[in-house]
Image 1 (cartoon, rainbow, N blue to C red):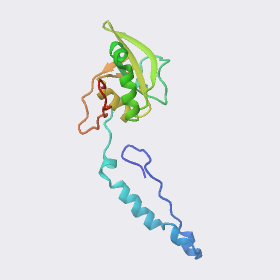
Image 2 (image 1 turned 135 degrees about the horizontal axis):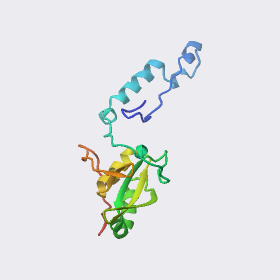
Image 3 (image 1 turned 30 degrees about the vertical axis):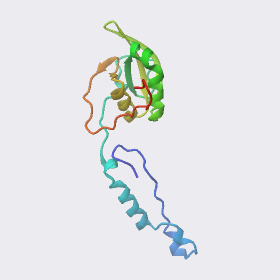
Image 4 (image 1 turned 90 degrees about the vertical axis):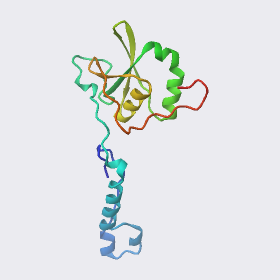
Length: 164
């Protein structure tokens, strides 16, 4: 079973040959019809039928970048001053929401402001990070400012004093 974005949700296995051979334990295995019905029921769950919003990957970079990896194509930039002030809270919030935080080490200077970039393997994690910390989406070496997707789940804040 795959969702609308092509992510594998479940594997539903069946064995029809056991019924034909009249094995004693054939009742512990699904028939192909039962497996098909279960897979169809899983695919009808509304949250799996919705496509995630699509933002561009950084794959379309204009020039060579030592910081772009094929395994982590989604990049978000945060202002360096913001990261320095809130680094511990950012890390704690990402751990709390199970969003893997992976800094590329790339520092960009744009209009007198320093930016630090973070890369993500899953677009869903990158969008949540971008939305929570008011980052800038990167396409190549340029910043892109897409609108926040409707009905998109936001990252939860850590419940402690002074946390983001």
